[in-house]
Length: 176
Image (cartoon, rainbow, N blue to C red; front, side):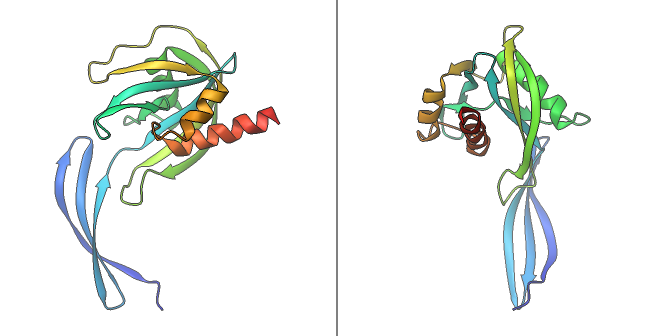
């Protein structure tokens, strides 16, 4: 079996400043395939731990699930910004906290998106200002104990599960 996949072309289906959807066509062997792929900006997020060992998250209304869920602090990387600059800025804007950052990994958002998610760990987080008001977001910062965070991991109320699982691994290693 040949593993060669030939790209035949693409057609734009939809576009706005934050999202472009294209139909991409491929050939593998004697079969043609068609996929719909989202072209999106990259994101940077962090698992955040306060100086007191609490987990810092954002409880936010999200239109996809059509309800409140828990998010890790982070957001879209603006043109010209690095992932680290973005995650520092987003943690401050969304929660009012600053911290010490360590890069953990980078992964694709989904198999049908060009976006990458840059995942960081923020430790020694301390409150330095109130969170910023964002007219496009209904959200509030939330502090959780380790036990409450562990319950949240299994609840289905969490976005960015990959980042949360890495944070959980870090917390387990620290508890040792």
